[in-house]
Image (cartoon, rainbow, N blue to C red; front, side, top):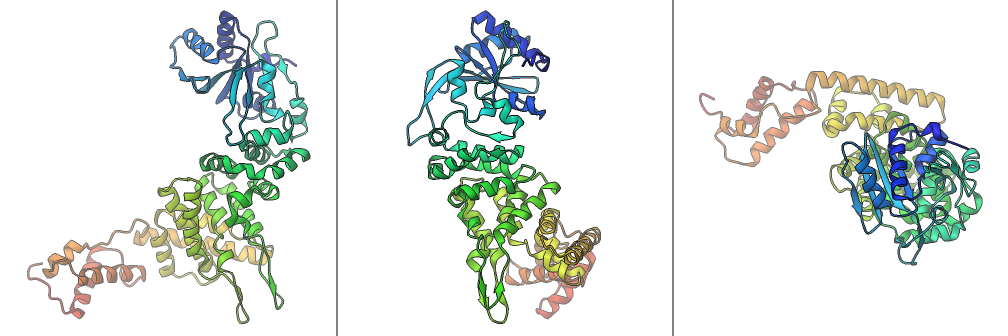
Length: 474
């Protein structure tokens, strides 16, 4: 099969020319070829393998491009990269690899194209297209990767136990590709992941999170997370999540399976956002339920305080997996800790003061919070489903009305502490905090509008009760 027509971009002719001048064979390989055949977006990253020095090929290619793009060289890995138009092109010499049990970093030797294809993680990523003038555009497929693409199957070129033990990150990658592409992992390969799951412990948290993020950003993340659960990887990576997969019954009272509920929520949120951190919030929103689960004869099963505990647990997960401990963490914590607030509003009569408090506490993230809570409705009762979503629509409208009128989202007190100090000739003291808090509460309760004059008059009246006198001419 020939793909010459698919290699229309001038860069392929340039690479072919550079390889000819160096007297080496070169091939397009990996994800670009896979996605080209699948009809997916394949134009951003291109991997080139040279039977010879990949670094020398990259430098020669740069010479042949009119503006001579900068070549980044990674000598330790024997690779080089340059940017052409909007594409990142990576060059590597064909190689064969051997691994030590305590590391996923291989010992590398020069090799043939066949050696290089042998070391690839999956048959669908071992596909190569020749750039040699004698067979330009010809697909080289030693492991029937094309057939696996047609059958939507993920399998390893060689023994899966060796493939996964050598580089345990490939277990995550197999599951990620299954989630992204909607493919099935071949049965023997899936069993090998289960057998080798403990090997994931040698992989850094950053690498694991990179794969988790890609699963979360797929169209239906539950595919990936169910595979992580089935193979035992999830229990190693996120035991807080698998702890939710238990349903108890006492005196005829049961509770829902919060693990499968969580996966539904993550799937529900996907059509409404491509924000990976909001998807993380959906994944972690109920993790506090396992440790807070209690049974009482009066109330049945309860999970009191699970949102607060869940926020604390989210921080520990971020620390353990070496995730960013900055605003990303704070955002996820806020979403987890507030995840039940709009649901309570959706069940009850929606008052302006309740909406003002919601917007005050959520701030700029209130729309994200509403999106999360709408995804959290997984009831199979059509009447309840309609009722909750209708009430959420009411809450959203109220948020707009309240925000237009009261400007709570980026709340700044209309009268400052400094002005209060001047008004009553005060030094920093408890009374100032009391008055500022009273103004905030009055605005949130709707007693006064969020305006300077109203706040000024309110402060004067409240100050009298505290025995404070306004300074003359103020």
